[in-house]
Length: 434
Image 1 (cartoon, rainbow, N blue to C red):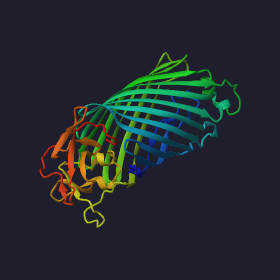
Image 2: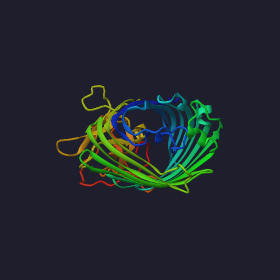
Image 3: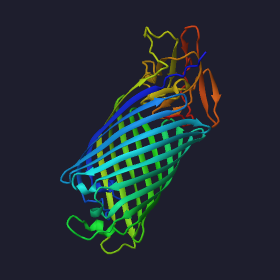
Image 4: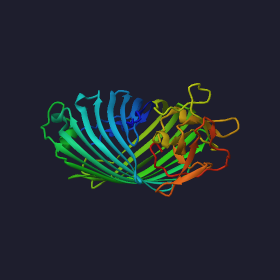
């Protein structure tokens, strides 16, 4: 008898962010400082549209993801900034206490105010997530990016190479609270192309034609809190230094504050403020401190679909020949609750695995699962939660527990959640999508 491997499960999701705001230093999006050849002064209103589509294929112990994204910012009097990118990622979950992700990245930037600002980029990202203990994750990330500029004779830079390393500790003391502390280091090395002044040669390009290296160490602290109902708040603070070879050393700091409110399962409204302040030490003549303030409001819409070879069906589906299993969770104030489990490699993109609030209060979902024993847990507003009323539990290697559900073999409905405790405890944030 030949063993037949299960077909990979596919998923497709899309997101569209649209909004408007005011930016006091827009070109710092792509320029390290006002001396960068990519910098152009602009302070004023902007409108933004940012669509993205992500497709995925999940096998027994691997997931392949392809993401296509774009970001268009239209200004008043300084043209449009357009960024497009493609990402191809390979995810390998549960390699011992780690989850691993390897991503290849490519992109293109264009600014209609000056065709000479165009550049293309390619690189990669390697990330490892260590599920250190219950509620704790340690994330190490390395990014590598090469940029090629379309008009090196005008910009004074042919290409550059950026390397970035980040070590981040994330802690979830409660399902509604997430905290993070990160340290990062950026190293940018450019291949300069000195060029004489002439038509189209900006002073910034001439000034930076001799620059070869830029370094930026920084530390950051951030927090996300579910404020109750459908609202979530986010805040961050960071402090760093910007060192340019043969030039100044800048002390930098900043942060952000954001509030999002879920209007529907597929739609959020948001407001956000970002700040960057640069203070220069030993500045040369003509070099002054600078800052950036950004205020933005908008909407974010999402949609998702999936093709699961291990079908999950709702009650009343005449094609559901396997038994139906009910999952319930009491989580007052939650905005969204989903269930993830070993039956489909902990995939969070399956729409049918979303729980819905009932008139009695608990969140509830009915799933049709293959017969046998399965590990599972809930994800509440993006944070994993240990099932409080599982029939039994299985400890993993990281001081956490998954619930175990036994699916009946005889076609009789099985239920999970006969008791409904008032509180739930967070579980390790380690599985994909958690």
